[in-house]
Amino acid sequence: MPTKTQHTIVLLIEDDEEDYILLQKVLSKVPHQRYKVLWEQRPERGLAHMLMEDHDICLVDFRLGAASGIDLLKEARSHGYNHPIIMLTGAGEDNIDIQALQAGADDYITKDLLQGELLHRLIRYAIERKKAEQERDRLQREQIIRDEREARRNEFISMVVHELKTPITSLKGYSQLLGKRCERMGDAQGMNLAARMDQQVNRLTSLIDDLLDINRMEGDKLRLRESDFDFDELVEEIMADIQLTTEQHSLVREGETHATLRGDRERIGQVLTNLLTNAIKYAPESETIVVKLARDEQSVTASVQDFGPGIPKEQQAYVFEPFYRVEGVETSVSGLGLGLAIAASLVERHRGKIWVESEEGEGTTFSFSLPLAAQQVDQPMLEVGR
Image (cartoon, rainbow, N blue to C red):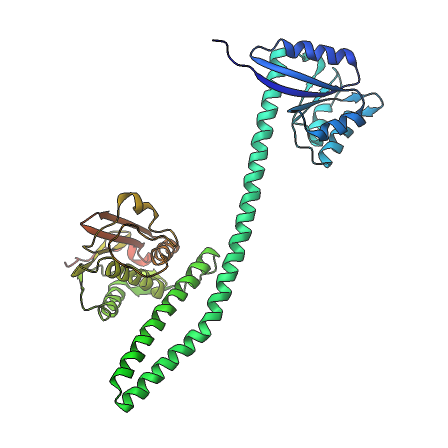
């Protein structure tokens, strides 16, 4: 069965009709490729034809009577002509190749080398290079547009978050004032309603803080306040605070690190807080949540293990992406899906690693590791209790 040939349209701008006839003959002998040659003798008509863009590639002679092919090439490019161009030159014309490429030609060839296979290869390569160049330019333009949209989105979120902060702060103050007034009056129902209002305000404040954090991270505006701190002490504090928020779950710590870390203590605490609150939300039936601590010569590792429904394998690669919510979990969980994304970004900014291990029906373990402070890297490890 014969192979179907492709059709390539070549625009030739050449003042010598014999060269036009020669080019037709050369291209007609190329196997498995069909060429159609369009011919223009005068440069002004050649420019007009180029801008019609009814062809795949343009071949321009360097000498067009009194005119220059270089000037024609420059003018065409200045009009936005973006098809590939090959410059034809006569033998012995020095530096034409450099001039042609600087003016915007994609390649050049001397007329004494006009052989079918060589010319076919030049045409094919020039067309493919131009396609690749145009695709690269298109991707760059799209990236610039995405970056501009992202910048506007971040600016908008930042403005909205800051505008919400003031009324939310006032609302929290009013709810607390209302609670105290109801307490003085002995109004138990009013106290209960004020407490519930305060809880909802805290929840809204947490959502706003998450939005502000992710916006700062994406805009590379989050600043860390680094200091040396005791990692075990921080873990103990966070676990004690989270334990006060739940009666159904028991938080259990296994292991110690006896480690000093260098970093933002508050932000590392935020990572552990996010992992623990996540475990509580997604494993409501899990009576125990285990925090495991370990240490090696270079780093410490903290793991938060729940015994909930687990995360499907196909979703585990996406859990650290902003606004991602695990699907198919049989529990109603509120939030924006930012907690894990924030945790991952904070760990990475501390030169650490974060990962997840999970089996459906058996629970989930989120772990992160952080480098030891420099003065502890070369010190021998203490015995770690379990």
